[in-house]
Image 1 (cartoon, rainbow, N blue to C red):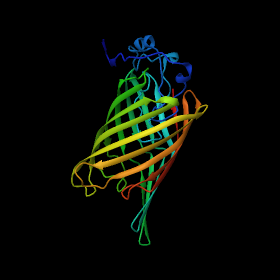
Image 2 (image 1 turned 180 degrees about the vertical axis):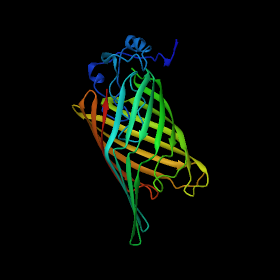
Image 3 (image 1 turned 120 degrees about the vertical axis):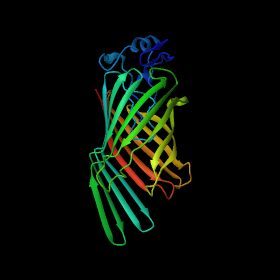
Image 4 (image 1 turned 30 degrees about the vertical axis):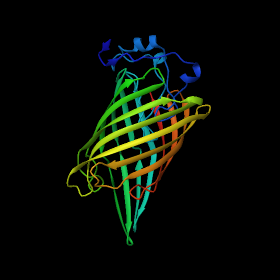
Length: 295
């Protein structure tokens, strides 16, 4: 039976253990709620919020690159923010250091299977050193608008999937962004594995401006993340992420990402992550500390 904002997904009742807070940014510990509860949630909207006792476990799109397949419950809000995000790269004789302060993703649940996101970067600084000369640019970053539609498994089952288109609006200060509209679509999925492991993966296609700023090119990104709860409320993950230009205009970019998440409460999640570049075209190193809060 079709509803205003989605379909009833098949769900199943699981143990209380599997109903703990989801500790991994990609949702690799799958939340589970019974079929009757899922059916009753179909009518909730932005203006008729999901009651707290029916809300699914907290699931964030950070700190890994693999996005969550789950949406924010209808009528509720979620903020995902990096307290600091640092990146370092050395290529030939050029060293680049990038710092973003409080880049954030603001989310609102529109209905039981759809939410909307606004990404913004209040302050970013890029420092480049080459041949004894240092250049620094800083300021406000670009805006990103996204919509996520859960396709199945939002409130139960051993897997989940979603579709998420996005568009980047070029609001960054001069010399900090490329000044071009870019966009794409992502397809994240999550699976429960034996022995309390969870796996998440994602494929994405993006229309990006090339390095010469002469045309838009199509990139394909692919990620896979494996996570597990290692102690009460403490989780760990490791992820591989790669990006390839389908026209062959850019070199292959890939990195390994790993980190920890800790649930301070059912609505507050702390995280720390490290990124290591695997190819010459990737940044050498990156780290971020952040949190997710839902209300």
